[in-house]
Image 1 (cartoon, rainbow, N blue to C red):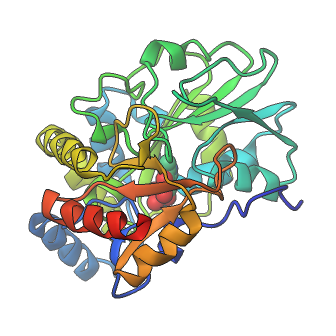
Image 2 (image 1 turned 180 degrees about the horizontal axis):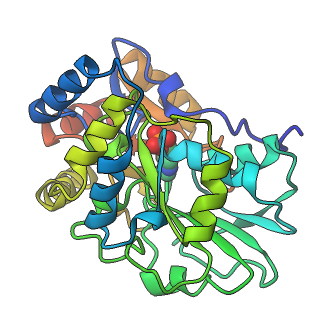
Length: 335
Ligand SMILES: Cc1ncc(COP(=O)(O)O)c(C=O)c1O
């Protein structure tokens, strides 16, 4: 089924062509750290055997204080969206937008009818989707708006008879993760989706996991290919489970503020950014984006996200020196 409107399979990696400063993909710069690369190299050396997920699953379960049968290890968060589409037969599937588009793309690829629940500017904060939706998908913090919904508002979506797929791929960009629901076992039908891609710089490894009720985890596992997660990915899960991310998240918050302070006149910041990227509104954004590319900077176009407009651009938070260079290029591009 062809999705209406924008290309749901357009992602920032297409825009981050070699030679440009990459502000289009929200993977942490400078990662994976050296200690994690050593873990990965050792795991490649140990890859002659088929992968054994037991230690990694136990580590993830312990990190979130949950039983092991509530943990599904996956080849990235993206795999979970496909497993959900494969395993469930929703009567009324609703995807909260603007948000990462793969969940909707996966549902459509499996021929499920999908409705969009559009959050409104200027805050893009969560509003209740239709009460009879039996599948609700949303992200928190949300890509591309960088908005962080209060945990209570997200928890209020859960109810018997409904599955809530909560994409927390960026959860650890919020220091201490107070709005995360990853540890909540009391909420019916809640599936929390996590990724190692962003924080640990492992986009190419394909590694993540999902947390939810045992029967839902089992249903998703039943439609997963055998040996879905490679030995190096399992080693990364074991090594990163419970590793401290809060100091980095604090540094990220300072870098985000630095970027916001540097932005030139004529640029509007959307909502209240709380993650590793900011959403901007600039006049004539397509031309500005092209000019930025000529100046050496790749930013993410906004118009392929349902609910955004052609004047939106998403920009990754980097160190202040990189942001200063970008801000100068943006001022020139606007001029
Ligand atoms: C909000 C969000 N969720 C999930 C993903 C995919 O994560 P993974 O690389 O673990 O599949 C992305 C990638 O851009 C994303 O932005």
